[in-house]
Length: 104
Image 1 (cartoon, one colour):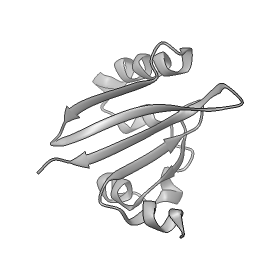
Image 2 (cartoon, one colour; image 1 turned 90 degrees about the vertical axis):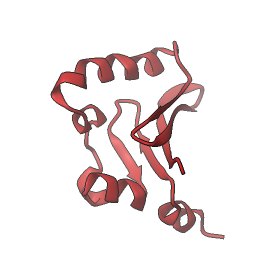
Image 3 (tube, one colour; image 1 turned 90 degrees about the horizontal axis):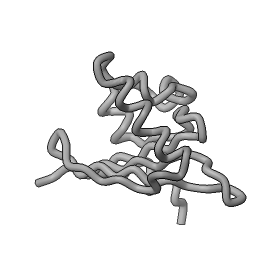
Image 4 (tube, helix red, strand yellow; image 1 turned 120 degrees about the horizontal axis):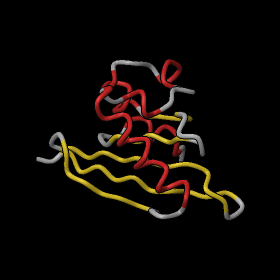
């Protein structure tokens, strides 16, 4: 079973960052949402995906994951359930996985 193909084409959004919150991977849902290809998104700082007036808040929010203060967070916004989850490599913070699922 090829998980990359499955995750790439599912009807939920998946976006993965590195420890500095630079996009490492995103699926088709995210490409369609942002109107950018994966290649265009790779290396993009996720804070820059937000409106200027929200950037300071988003940066502060993300730093809580890096510091270990937060490991996961779920909210409902824009008609979607959005979850942020930390992931680790060698017991050190390595980035976040964000999922988005449209609500019926």
